Length: 267
Image (cartoon, rainbow, N blue to C red; front, top):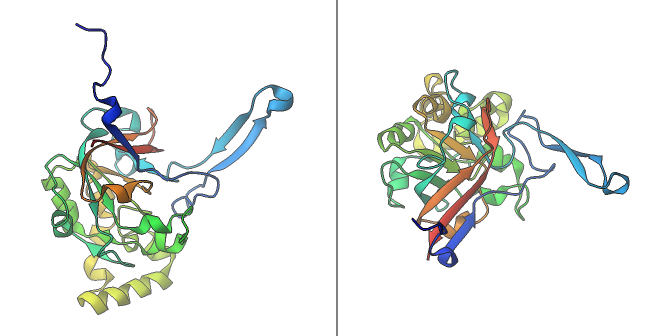
């Protein structure tokens, strides 16, 4: 057997970064601890720079692990790289239909991309353009107003055996199907009016109490987890099938983890 295990077509490999920059300015998910950074030593007089970080796991591009919402769920360290964190997938662009408080379902996905059973699924709502480092930065729209799915979509993910999902906004759940609905009733009222005006149904119809945080509570026991706050090169991959990798720490006991998410393609 040859000792040369290098990839044969390395020069033809394109690498797309689907992560957003992270700093002390990056908003964490509402009520979660943001990133704080301080130097505990400096090059002068200590001979090296050293930093101390404090943060929650839900700031910047991050992976929600099974343990985040499931008591018997595995930690981040238990997630296998090959054929789980890294594998074939597709990037679906919903930005043509996305709107504040909007709803999407499985048909919207399948109408726009070729999805295979067992895929990694990345959803581009277009709301990454409201991320903290973007020219149109708008934390309210990014965290509070982005579109989200209903229970039908979660059941479709189970049927299609989706490995994990990634979204380019604050949560894989509709924001009004999270605690935000309770914390920010003024926006819940606006969302309810919008949905009733467009669909003839309100928040209670789309998201009854038994469907609360369905992308977490319904899917995590099935090991269908998700990453949130993607961005970067995501617009370059609309409708494309690629190899996708999520790279968190090998975090024993970790319920979630800040991550780098990358897509690989041969062009």
